Length: 153
Image (cartoon, helix red, strand yellow):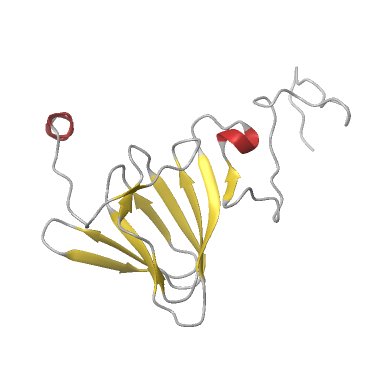
């Protein structure tokens, strides 16, 4: 194991480092609902991460995650991520090992069309707790003046 000059030795097993000054291990089977990493679970300030299993032949409602980005990693199964590009509905089929980024405020839904196998994904969001806002339909977001000025500069 490498050490660095001036490194402070690890505390004894009975001496715990402050909650935000140590690495947290959340073992499999220790999920709090779906959450593995959250403000309530490990004191995260800007990140939520969890495991989600969508049963066979299931679909979420249309929703977005507010100002949070969502990164998704497909562990198993073949989920389909659906959003609207302003002209039509777009369906992105996925398989194990695929990654997706869902930008802030983008309405979407996840589907599992497989009749036998659940779809299991790991989700990371840039908020300490999950946020989900249901919407009646998929739609393309309108660019705000802030977004427009950023894209032209």
